[in-house]
Length: 324
Image (tube, rainbow, N blue to C red; front, side):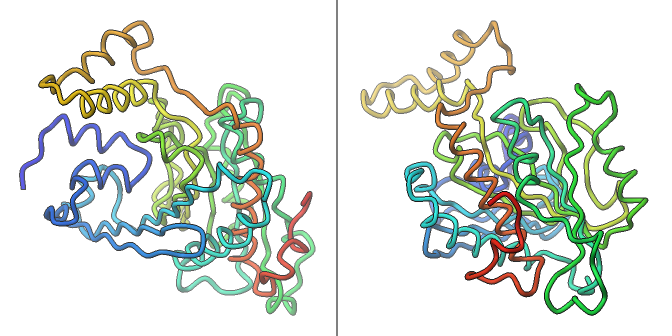
């Protein structure tokens, strides 16, 4: 199958694997699958779980990301039930825990430490999902004992900040800590950028290929992955922003559909005209972000906690967290 070069560039620039897959394959389930990619979908109590498996080098090249597993938990009601956090916390954290446990290294022993890293800038709400998640993670590595392996795992947690605040490349800070404590695995949490407005604060992506901080907002930094750190890296992210171009394009597409007009390039023309002063630097976050980010961070932290600690179940997982 031949793909337009512009379409490939768009797909490869996206943070969300499901969005890249949809862009390449299209909306119809009858369309041929992207070569080297397998997609499965199932429902759960609070939404839908999409799994994208990139199986070979061809799939990796087309999708613009490494071979591996990309799981997206779609929970459209997350941003609509801010007054009922428990109804969101339990089912979503359970699905998240299952997804994380499924991509943990198969040979990771119970006593192996896991380093949880919260990427982002705590001073910026839309970029604070990582640091906020860390505030709920209970470190256990400093008091862990071997005979506790049936209940807890040794966990360390850091929020290294951003290079603009520290003057040090974030990946280098993470590598320094990794070399010192020698964890068996890393779990890295970060904010993502979405292509679709509907995915903002309503989709959680988990993958076993690491992450390149800032890629979704055209600020690519050193990748945080196994090739760089020497240990497996699981990335967990949630889209908190969408590009301004997306809002205009989706609005124009809707207008075209309703007016049934013959103007296939109108959306792109609107983007170019209205956003020319900003180039690709305009991103937008919802006004509810102040409430959504702490909720999403709590859910992600609960999922990580339930995945890592053997004794943390649905009834008592909050006892293995802090500030909750």
